Length: 64
Image (cartoon, rainbow, N blue to C red; front, side, top):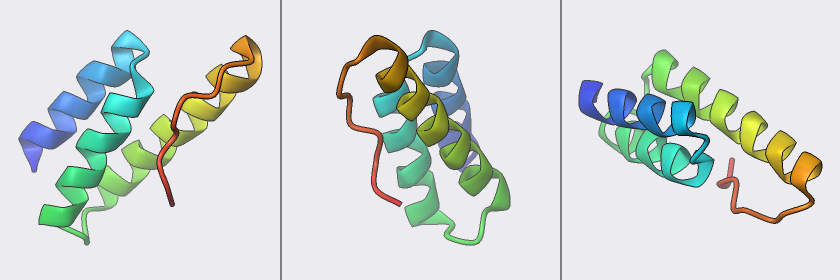
């Protein structure tokens, strides 16, 4: 779980939100009760949606 959290945060810092979202979702499959993973996933989804609006692109921002 720590590895998926670290991996997701790495991708967030690079602006690679789709990959970050996937990492956090994989972590949540291992531990659905993780508040930290849920928080980071929500942050990554919001950042992805913001990026899509600003750049007028349509990256996948995960399903929640």
